[in-house]
Amino acid sequence: MDAQKVMVFSLAMRMSSFVNLAMLVLASASVAAGVTFFSSSAAQAGGFEVANNTASEVSGNANNQNRSVNFKRDENINVAVAANFAKPLKSIAEQFTELTGINVAVTVSSSGTLYAQIQHGASFDVFLSADRARPQALVDNNLVHHGNLVDYAKGKLAFVYAGKLQREASRESSCEEIARSSTGDTTAQLNIQLTDCLSKKLVKLMESPQSKVAIANPKLAPYGDAAQQTLQNLSLWQRFLPHRVMGKNVLQTLQFYTTGSVKGAFVAYSLALDLPSNLSSNFTNAASDKIADATTVIVPVPEPLYQPIIQSLVVNSKTAAELLPNLFEPRPIKNTTAPNGQPVHKDGVETTKPFHLSDANGVSSPSLFVQYLMSQGVQHSLIEWGYEPTIASGVGN
Image: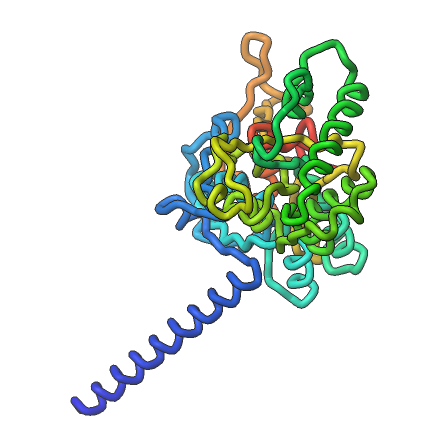
């Protein structure tokens, strides 16, 4: 009998070692493929880091939900997100888990990579792309219900470079100063000035054959596509090609810059906001020309130079998601004794009730997650992350 126990124990240990080895191989393959994973519940206990950037908390506007729910769901959902939106999604997912008890397991990669995985049957519950084309293609190919497509954010493109790669002429305004200008110039006039300034910076940067500039892969990442459109509209694409370094997604593209592998990079404006003003010693040591007291310059790329980056999501199901009414918005309390169930008023003001999870019976967890993302508080918080909300209230277009 003891021998049998020993054999069973030995077999269990071998199986455990095999599983651990398989998980390690899978994780290594994922990193090599430019894919990152994190969980909303695990993220609350420990930090989540991508491209050497630690996530910060979202503003209190997205956090003002009522926490006194009657119960919490012990469920999990799988969310796939484009790399540019990974950081805000981490905070949003944490808040959603705290409010509902629903854990959010997140896969981060380029939009193109995630789209291909869904086409091959990946079991993501929600897919947040950095463009509208890929979610729309899933709808057009009848892989998801047409009512499950939602615009959740509008992104912006930025160009970042080391501020002392070239000296600013004393009488010439920097691109940053133009972007922050509070003069009476119209938006069109500012865009003309900023376009001219950006073009000159890129030309100056590419004068040296050793200077490298990074963009995300235009075939996989919408921000890379926007960068290519920008360079083509500036008539600099052919001149740029010998200097090109291409990342799998915008996070890797940004990492090329922060480690000093390149002297400039086109990235999501939301990611550029987190860059420290002073560059690390890695940059000055790795760059071909040593730069004293180098600082990062963030140049918002004028929007006329690229197609609008409307970021959309889909609930990955062939059945319609329950997106309205949005249970995370204050809802009027109905007077059950009134003839038509009219809202209750107190001192002339309509009374409302906050979110309670018990009201979400019958609403799927993926639908509930999208409702939270599209609630006014969360949408308003996107501004601080460098995005524009896509809606005034409720669910997007």
